[in-house]
Amino acid sequence: MTGAQVVGPVGEPVACARGDDGGATVDAVGLDQVTDALLRRFAGARRSEFRQEVRVCVPRASLYDALYLLQQEWGFDLLVDITCVDYLHYRGATERFGLVYLLCNTRDNLRLTVRAMLSEPDLTVPTVTSLWEAANWLEREVFDMFGIHFAGHPDLRRILLPPEFTAHPLRKDYPLQGRGERHNFTPLAREDG
Amino acid sequence: MTASQDYLWTLNFGPQHPATHTTLRIVLTLDGERVVGAVPHIGYLHSGFEKIGEHLNYNQYVTVTDRMNYVSPMANNVAWHHAVEKLLGIELTPRCKYLRVIMAELARISDHLLCVGAMALDVGAYTFFLYGFYEREKIYDIFESLCGARFTNSYTRVGGVLHDITPVTIEKIRDLIRRLPATLADMERLLTRNRIYLDRTQGVGVLSASAAINCGATGPVARASGVTRDLRKDEPYLAYNDFDFQVCCARTGDCYARYLVRMHEIRESLQIVQQAIENLPAGPVQVGADARVGLPPKSQVYQTIEGLITHFELVMPHRGFSVPCEEVYGAIEAPNGELGFYLVGDGSHVAYRARCRPPSFVHFALFPRLMCGHTLSDVVAVLGSLNIIAAELDR
Image 1 (tube, each protein chain N blue to C red):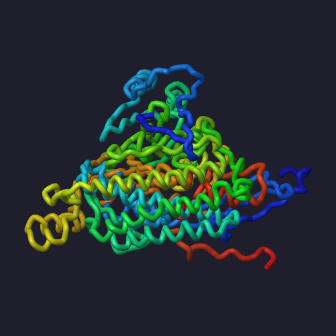
Image 2: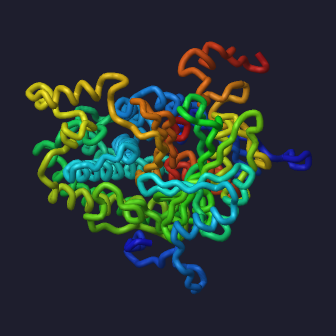
Image 3: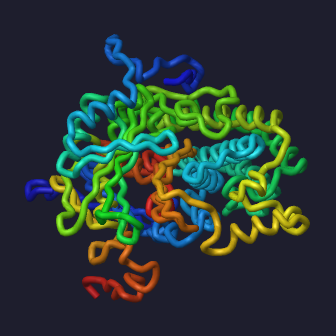
C-alpha cells in the first residue's frame, strides 16, 4: 500500500487487510525479478515494455504454467481482465489471435500483462478458473466474442449473445453492420400458443 | 436439481423487474423462501460497444462511453481518454488534470447517491432515495452549465476537455460543497441506525476479503470486504497525488458495509472536489496547438493559421493523431471499481481494439456466490449493493 490511510467507515481505524499475512514479513517483489524468473523458466518467452507497462509474451504451451507460477509464487492474486485481440488485418502480424491476461499483485502493487498468441485451427487454451474465480465470466466473454475455447472451463456458454448465435462478432472478419441483426432472428412464440 | 429435490421452485427474476433497474435476468432456485441457486443471464442490452470502438476515432468514441455506465458518464469519459492519452503519450496540462479530477469525483458522488438511494428504495426506504436524488439533480445542473449536457456529457477530448470551466460553474460546485454535508447527515440519520434497514442488510451477501480479490472485485465492493485497494492511491493518475483524502474500507463485507463505504466515499470525494476547486491551476486547459494532439479552442481555429491547420489535420479522416502500433491498458478508479480500457493502436485514426474492462461485469459474476442461502427478499438488497448497471454489464 503506497501511503494510503485506511479508516473504518464510521471513523474507527481498520487494519490493512494486505498486512494480515500472519505476521510473516515477506520481502517486496519487484517486477524485474518476476519477469527474469519467467524468462528463465519458459524458453521462448519475451519481455517488452511500453509506457512503463511490462508485458511478457509466453508460448501458448506454457501459458497455464506461467499463470500458475505467477499466482502461486509471485503473488499475482488479482486477475483484472482477460481479453483477446484478432490480428487478422494487423500489419506484420504472424499469428491470428493474441490472448491478454492482465494481472495485478495487490500486496506489492505490481501490474503485469501476460500474452499468448494462437492461430487457427487450434484455438484451445487451458482455463484459469481454478486459479482465479474471476476468470469464469471473462473467459466466457472471450469465447463468445472470439471463439477461443477454454479447456476445462466449468460452464463455457455464450454470455452476451443468445445461444443460437453462430458467429463470433469481435473477430475482424465479422462486419460492423449487416449480419446477426434483429431481423435475422425469428421471434420466439409461446410454447403453449 | 435432482429428482429427489422436486420440491424446489424455479423463479424467473427479470429481465423486466422494478428492482433490476435495468434489464437483466436471474433464474432463482428456491427452497421455500430460501435461495439455493441463482443463475444470471445477461446480454439483453448488448450493443456491440467494443465493435463500434474499432470504427470510431478516439474523440468520437467518447459519446459511446457515456452510454456504458450512464449513472456516472463523466467517469467513463475520463477513463476512456485516460487510456487514449496513455497510448498516444500525451501529458495533460495541470488545469485539465484538476478539471478531470473534479468531474470524476462529482460523478462518483452522483453514482454513489443513486446506488445507495436505489438500494434503500428496494428494501423499502423511499425518503432516503428522494434526498439522494435531489442532490444528484444539482450535480446534473453543474454538468449542464459545464458542457451543456446533463446526462450524456462527452466532456473529455484527447489532450483536454470540451470547454474550460466558468465562474458560474465554480460557484455551483461551491454551493454543492456547502450544502451536501447537511444532506448527507440527514440521509445517514434516516438509515445508518435504522433497525429495519440494519436487519435487511447486515450479514446479507457477505464477501470475504480473499474471495473479493480472487473474484476480481474492485472499488467499493472490494473495499467493503477489507481490501485496501484504490487506484487513486495505488497508481495515482491525473492529479490525485496533490489531494489529501482517505481510502474508506470496512471489514464485514455485507450489504451494510458496502452502503457505509459508499456514504463515506461521498464525503471524501467532496473533500477532493473542494481542494481541487480552490486550488485550480491557471493556464490552458488543452494541450497546445503545436503538439498537434488536442483539438484547439475555436478562438484559435478561427483566428490563427496554426489553429486552423491543427483542427483540419485532426478532424480529417486518415490524417489525425500519430498513433503508435502498440497496446496499453489504462484504468481509473471509477465509482463502481476499476474501469479500464485495453487499447490496441495500429497507426490509423481509429483503435484496432478497444476493450472495456467493466466493473459491473466482474461484480455481477459474484451474485450467485453472495446470494445462496439468503431469502428471496434479499435478492434486491444484494443486487442494489453491487450497483449493477446493465448497460455497462452488457456493453
